[in-house]
Image (cartoon, rainbow, N blue to C red; front, side, top):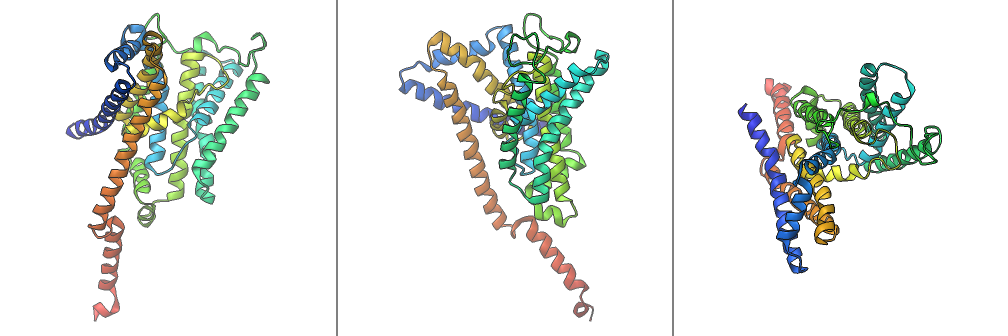
Length: 373
C-alpha cells in the first residue's frame, strides 16, 4: 500500500508542477500583452468546470486523450517512438463501426465484439510498424507517420464510398450505429458516457502491466537493449508485442469516440488527439496516474479556452501558448534527467552493462585453467 501511495505521488507531482509553471509564465505573457491574467484564467476555469455540463464536457474530451496517452506511454517506455496514434485511433474506429453495421447479432454480444475489433484494428495497424522495426530496423517515427496518412485516406474513401450513408444527403459519413450499441450516458443532459469507466479500468490495467513480467521485460528493453539481450530477453519479440499493445489502446480510444460520442464514422474523426496525447504522456512522465492529471489539464484548456475567447476576447492562441510552455518544461526536465543520469552512470562504473561485463570477466578468470592451477 505504501509503495502504491509513493508511486501515486511520484506520478502526480511532475505534471502538476509543469502545469503550474506553464500557467504562471502564461499569465506573465498576458500581463505584458495588456490582458488581465486573473480575469482570463477565471473565464477559462469557468468554461471548463463552471457547471455540470462544462465538467462533463471536459471529461468527455479527456477520455480519448487519456486512453491514447496510456498506449503511447507503453511504447515510449520501451524507447519505441509511436507517433501513429491518430492512424491507429482511426483504424480501430473503422473496425469497430464495420462490425457494428455488418453483423446482425444481439447487442449484448455485438458490443463486446466491437470493443475487441477496435483493439485488433489499432493493434494490427501499429503492429506493422513494430514488425518492420524488429525485422528491418526501420525507423518507427517514419513508418507510424506514413501509416497515419494511409489510415486517413482509407477512412475518406470509406465514408465517401463503400460505407457512405445512403440517406445522409451526400455527407461523407457512415450510417448510425444501433441505439442499443451506444454507451449509456452517466449524467443526464450531458454527453458524459460509460467510456469514463472504461478509461479508469485501462488506467488500472496499465498500472498493473508495469508490475507484470511482460512489463518488467518491456522496461528493461527501454532502459538498455544490450543488457536486455544479454539477460536472455527476446528484444525483437518485445518490440512487436509492445507496439501491438500500444496501438491496440489507441484503437480503443477510437471505439470510445464512435460508441460514446459520434455514433458513426466521419472524416478526420481523430481530431489530432494522437499528437496531443504524446504531450499528455510526456508531461506525465509516462506514469498512468500522471496521465490522468495531464489529460484533464489539456482537456480543460481546450474546453475552457473556447469560453475564454468568447467571453473575454482573449485569443484562443493563448491555449496553444500554455500548451507549448508545458512542452518546454517537459523537454527541460528530460534534458536535465539525461544529464544527471549520464553523470551518475559515468561515476558508477559505466552503469549496469559495465557491472555485468565486469562480473562476467571475473567469473571467466575464476574458471580459467590458469586460475585452477
